[in-house]
Length: 400
Image (tube, rainbow, N blue to C red; front, top):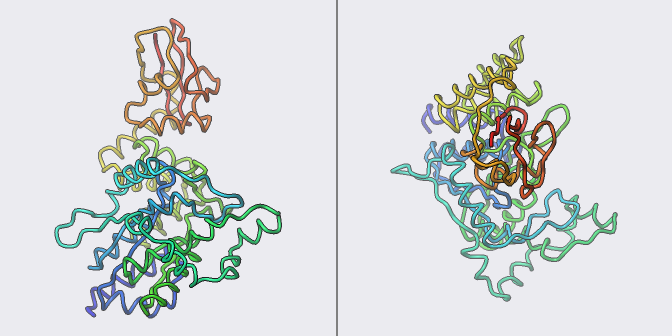
């Protein structure tokens, strides 16, 4: 092991992103420095967009790739249609194959600035578990099921809670950890990277890999990006968080709206800044300045330096200097009325229809101070125009 590689491995493992390593950190550190490992991270595309809480795991995957390891981004396009019961007190809504396919396509676009899928010598790979899970026969499913007991499944907190509250647990939810675990067997991986909320599923995969191939798998669990005071998490299923498909202005403004205690968390999890610099910024006396640095660094990763600095300038002008009401852009519709969705499509040309609908459903749209949450509503535009506010920091003067 070269001193340089040993230094890089130590830097990755001690950044503060990783919380648990099974079976041991010592064994994993040695393998990471000396062997070429096959490492994967899986994700069920159950929502239209990822958020910054997911970004740290893909950045860590890229760190492993740059060390020379083979990395895989696995889309759970089959398991997404089952629905992971993790931390759910009721059964998840099952998605259609078309919904999953569309989400997966969008997710790849959202993480292309985080993971190199085009590297000439060692590109990250993309796989889909529908390729093998959809082909399992009943005989193979029964054989797979024979490796895990019902008692082990019931160890999951959310199942215990549902039993106490007399809420239903469906058999297909028991199948989820088995299906996810079988991914490790088919891909013949050495390491699974996951969040702490996925440890149970990842360890099922470790058991299956031992039984099917007599092979141990490392499980590397990262911390969830949470508020250190309240414990609140970003959540794709709840539609909360700062989404990776946000415009530069929305991403910058989203970070600026986070509480001060999130500055260090975001710098550690979602930037490439060294820890010494992180401590310096997080310890600044003026926390607003610290947050501006954080917002700029994060926005740069996804949109580049030029657009990030433009977003910062726009934020200072419209929000910090409170010029929004007098200096909003004017948008001409060319008619005296239109559906809410059409108005937003005209004003938010950079946003997709799914993003716009999400904003509407989250009560983030106001016209002349009134919340509008029905995208089919016909809006009458007065001759003097209507003031449209989207989220906390976007304004438009809509004219007929």
